[in-house]
Image (cartoon, rainbow, N blue to C red; front, top):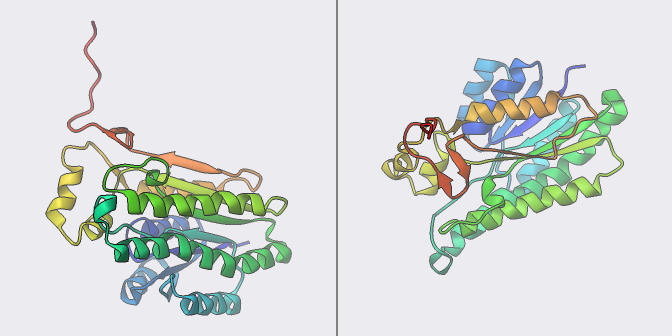
Length: 260
């Protein structure tokens, strides 16, 4: 049976890398994002399908569900879309940025999950055996840091949604997985967070040996989805070796300490 996954955030970064990784391992993939032209270019390259949608819009999510329902079974939801805006202290935070982060990270996850669960169940009843929901959160959901409160709160909210969902689906053959990456260097995430300031984004990674890249996260996601049906990776926290914790980042070459 060829399985079909819906991958959000597919126009760039981790989402795009997941589309590539799943296509390489034999999945049919529907990539979802707002930028239709980038989705179409990806489709042409790797043979995915695409659907342009704003995932914080109830109307767009309803249209996505109708499209999926009419075009075949859905065996996995991989929710990568989200993001951060700003790096302000709590007292200086822009309510518009905080509202956008809640809608992009939490509300979109709720809307998609509610819309696609019936389709996942339909695929199981048609003989698929099991289905998957997988959410990319962040180590920001686990540890607060100065200037991160809005994103901390949004990603923690998404993580709590995932934890509750796993409990609510107990007894059904639907796996619920959370992937929480630390420092990942992608084309757009940090630049967008910092208002388009590429120099500031580059400084964040300056001197860090081998930060994670989108393909690293995509490989873990593909592993989780391709694991035997009885194996659920509840939570995978992944960081580059240079980042031992949210607040502890080595800059400069990694090397063993000299003896004695």
